[in-house]
Length: 241
Image 1 (cartoon, rainbow, N blue to C red):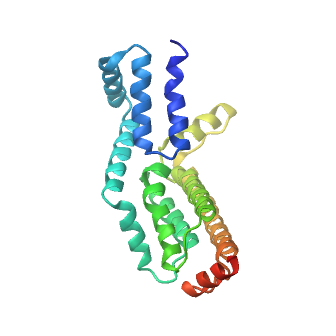
Image 2: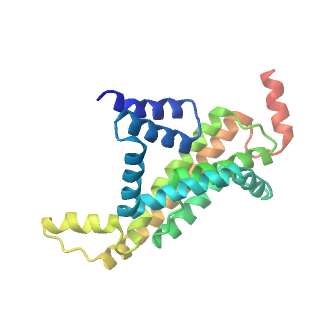
Image 3: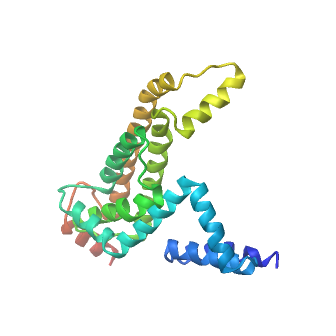
């Protein structure tokens, strides 16, 4: 029975490997773990309710996942792709760079969009793919996978450096509590002010890097990145044939 409890982990691994719906995978894994663990449905709901009330941040995360899943089901990805398709000369690298700047600004006010699962996957990635299609190209799996890594990297960089800009966040308090035993009395407001140029430089460097990397990837997969439209796509297809 002890080993059967690990069945939930196996479900998560297999589900993500098969690229099934993330929310459905988590729910199924939780229910299966509760059943094989012997707590039953009542115990599972009680534990879930207790955790929901005692841990508000986790409760908000669950709500964001549910809302995101509902929006995805009702055409969020399609709407995001159509929106970026109306912007002339938009590239995936530009989309990711702009998102990084926006993410930094909102992180400075401690506003979270839900991270990779809640915003990057359902909004930013469809916009990046939409930018590829708007240029007349067919999204290639290898290219899209690279963009996923770039978008996730930008999310991590912007949130990591941006969250400390808000006085009193967990990151700022962690720095303060870590430095105090070492003899450094860290003022949260002063630390936030000092962090501003660091955060701006970090996101700026990441944005430039991803734009340059995206241009290199577009040249690799579609030919000259400066040539837009279906002409390049047709020429590339002709060479491959």
